[in-house]
Image (cartoon, rainbow, N blue to C red; front, side):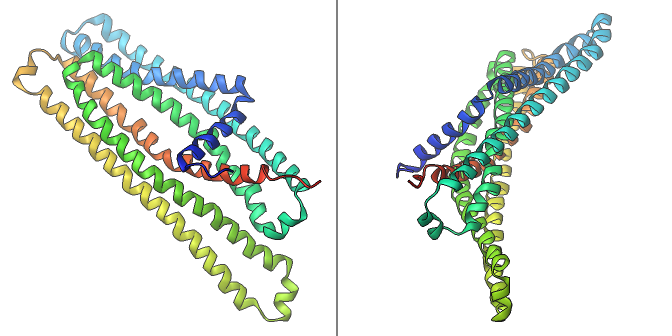
Length: 329
């Protein structure tokens, strides 16, 4: 690949990966439709809290008392069906992408010049065929499921919150940029560690390959201890890199949740002020609070999706570098 800036490289790689998904656009479109319906049910559940509290509990309207349980049940039935359709369709797209990429990589193995094999061990190449492609498939299927579904859910809930009460919703304008800045900060760490993990997996498979292909030579020269030490070094390096990735992910999540909780605390404080008591009904506050609490889970998932995205981009760079190699005449 050309030596473009890292951000442009990442964007180009992900665009190229998404083209593989578009080859199965019918299945992809069904998955997106399921995600849209799923996101709508989340906002619908928050919206139903308002009449549940105002008409059923405060005004004791008998029609609403009979209707609310059926409405809640209908929302969760629709949500379950939508989740099933989106998960099945995206999983199908992901496995088809894996099949396509593995066929292309294997075909490239047949065409690569001998000099390329002299420069790269078979263990590293096998790692691209197995580990890297699995990471790419996760980036283009499972990640999209979470990203699209939860992004739509977040937008729907925030829009509903602004519709319910503009004054309370202003806290979102403060919390949102802080969370976005935190996500951008940890993205750079995720991508760097992911690229190192790709190389580390190649080292692990290369060390194992040497023993498997040359086991007789190792035994003749009593090299078992030496090979064990070499494998321990690359294995430990792989473990440390994974732990750094986990630590970055684990550290960013509670910080983002703390920022969101601060916004929630501010909403509760403003809603209970004497100036707000007469303008915010029980149903409004309950519905708004439900929407804000429902916002926490998709917000957490969107934050955590950063790691597999960066892993998939790093794996995609590795695979496309291989596929773009000139074939032997």
